[in-house]
Length: 190
Ligand SMILES: [Zn+2]
Image (cartoon, rainbow, N blue to C red; front, side):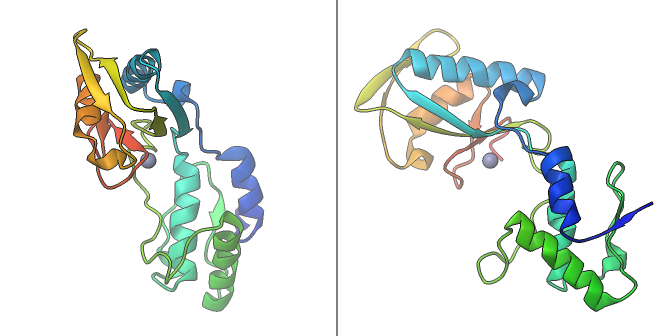
């Protein structure tokens, strides 16, 4: 039997739909590429801290629809179903449906207007295991091996999005920078 939307689902997701920060949870090819890139960086003396890898599709689903319903961006009855998540979004009363969804938004700590005007996305390279969030730091200039074995000199910049030399090394390993999101690297730069 389906369980109505509400804070139950926050607890459920924390047990059954967790996000990962383990590189080993990435898609196989990307995992190999990320490991090679980060090894080259650490061998050169950089410090790499991974904060997010594979995102749960079920968690993203709960984020997306709870946000939209609670903010009145759609009716509870408009929410799609997802296999493995037996949630009843529609309480049979729109105000109750919105209240149940809002319990989830608050429980998950989702940003709502004016802080965020976009519903959390249903699709992402993170969900496919094809994106990694990581912080890379070092001091001065280091020499990092590209995939072909040649070395690139890279000077630290506090703005990683502007460090084209670092992006080129990542490219050589198939790990591409999204230049609008500081920690984010992926298979296609998105
Ligand atoms: Zn990311």
